[in-house]
Length: 249
Image 1 (cartoon, rainbow, N blue to C red):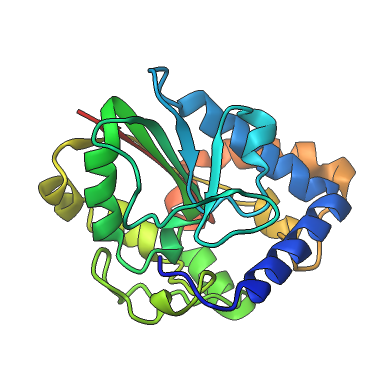
Image 2: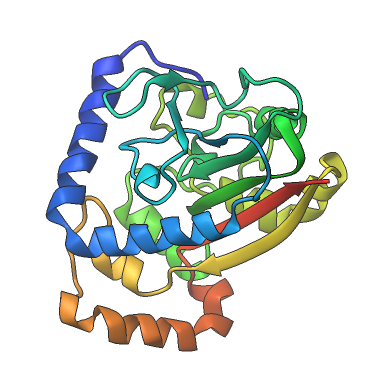
């Protein structure tokens, strides 16, 4: 991801996300559950847990020792790191966490090359990103401001995404780790996929996310989550999110 010179814009966007976090209890509930899931997948080996594109830094509530980074200086992070040119020694990192970041990478291939280099043996990349199911693709294209292009490249340079930290193609993780997974396995054989999971079928889209209108009242959240669990076999058709865990051989 290439840094933009408009630092004020990034800081303003993150400030709005921080305000939404404080005002939306359902949003906090969902994201904290996802952060718990990420925490449970971390490699338990020596070395730092580095979150790339940390935003408002909420992973640290669940993983206190995490190193928070972003593509530019912000009030929530102190480390400036480009995911496509990691400033870490070979085999020195225990975990790289990308929460809603993979689809913002201008060149996923450069990131994966860097991850393969910087991860220690048995270290992990944990990606939590939008998933483009038949349902969510329609919803993303109609209601979300970010581009969703399933005809785009899974791994190659995307010049449009390189223009700013919040430029993106929300289909990237779907393309890279599901539709074109065989190419991923061929090109990065030392990054073994230990988990590829589709999730977030009901509660997340009904929550309104950070900026949409909340449809589901809080008392109904738990019943909706139980229904979502029962619908797990339909995740390829309905999921809005995916979790991908890669482990360095």
